Structures are given as structure tokens and as C-alpha cells.
Image 1 (cartoon, rainbow, N blue to C red):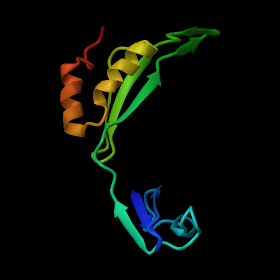
Image 2 (cartoon, rainbow, N blue to C red):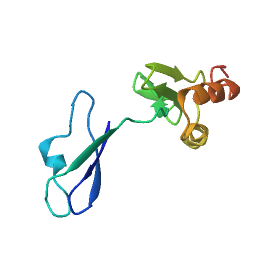
Image 3 (cartoon, one colour):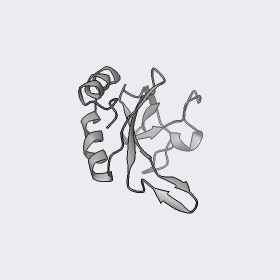
Image 4 (spheres, rainbow, N blue to C red):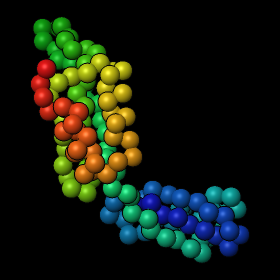
Length: 123
């Protein structure tokens, strides 16, 4: 949960407060510029945006490492507790390019792009 605070001198600051806390800790309610206490504190829920991750595909056996530069792509939704992981692996550069497809999109749009992008099809 994002919190926006403002002091009487109209300084504005933002803090990300961990889930489960009903309000920011006392130190976050002090203006970072002059130390005065916030007179306004407003909650702003996180927007429904997809979380993206690169998951290393490396494996190790008998001292040998395979798929050293290969990654699975993974997207997840914090609101719906759903996760999708690619069926195939990608190099670092390919993975970064593919993950950029999910920049600033909600879960529904991400699911459509995931399906159209063929991420669930093995090589």
C-alpha cells in the first residue's frame, strides 16, 4: 500500500508500507525535509499490474551446470494469486525483450498477451 503524506509546509512524500500494517510507522510520518509531522496521510492501493520475473533454468549434476544462460519467464498477479511460467527457456536478452511485453498492463491484458505470445507451448 502506498501512502502519500503532506506536512503543513506543503512538502509531499510517499512511502510504501508493507501489507498488514494499518498505517505507516511513526518515522515515516515525519517530513524528510524539515522533520515536521504529517498533517495529511492518504492510502493509495497498488494498481493491478503484473509482476514479472526471470527464473533461472540452470541445473547441476555431477559438478556440471547446464542451461547456464537460460531462463523461464514468469508473470503473476498479486490480486488473484495466479502465476504463469513459460514452457520453454530464453536467453537473458530474449527474456528481457519478452518480459517488456508486460510493462504496465493489468492481469487480464497480461493473460491475453501470454496466450498470443505462445509462452505455454514447449519448443
